[in-house]
Image (cartoon, rainbow, N blue to C red; front, side, top):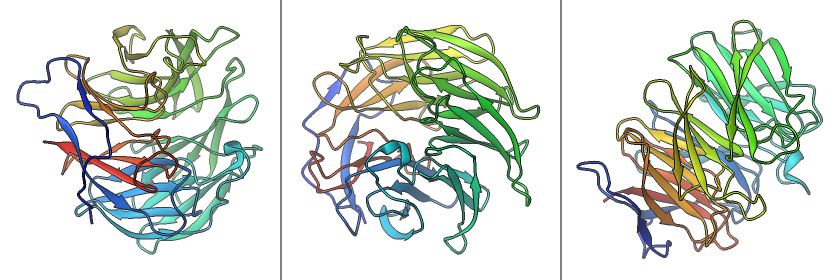
Length: 357
């Protein structure tokens, strides 16, 4: 269960007026992760219906399973390659829920399908690359899975049928992408899959969002995005997409920024300064809040809180360290889960749990 504690975070920054009636986010506890101290990990997702939280745990080499009703560790699914010398060939990586299954990327360019009734790997699908299958998305209308090989050259996205045959439908290479490819997202309002492309060509300030037709298996267009270096991607109200920008990382030369675009027009809806340097992002539809795992912010990592209606930064929760690049939101309890690694995380390697006061 959640271990309540003196706050691991140093402070909570309030940067703008919060939405009417909204409470400030604070840390309410931690969830212990058994086994080797949690050092490296990747994506976490919440099964909103079953109230389970799943985390790609590279340190212990499984998919970890947590009860999201009481925030307690339940068990794990072994069978992944674990942490290697390079993250490019480590796993597990991305996680997406497909009905009663979890589809999980691994470091050997495979997708492993986990039956969530038995918590066993029931299929392994090769994408034919040399490096990991990283972040991923699922189109439940057309029953298409999309997994990104971000570390291959060129990076590519693989579309796979989630039917019984688990047939590979298409492989789309991003030939102009010069810094990999990141988090994809299926947007129901357009029935399209979108994928963050950090950089197009030699200019770090020029990125894009790829729009993919899951029915035709084709790249429809690239939506250009400036000064963002897109990484995380999640849908919000209407046709809005929030881009968790890498901008703000001290190595990138761009100021911290998060961007909202209109998926239909490709136009920038709002540039949100003051928060960036993020990897994964998440959205709580019930509260109308986006969250950014802004691990590389100048001055230290932050958990960004953005009002999805006003597209405004309302809070930046200071995090202690531990490479907090993964974030997931529980739309029932409104708990927010941020894994904190053993190195600098302040809790010996755990899941930080945050909630509105």
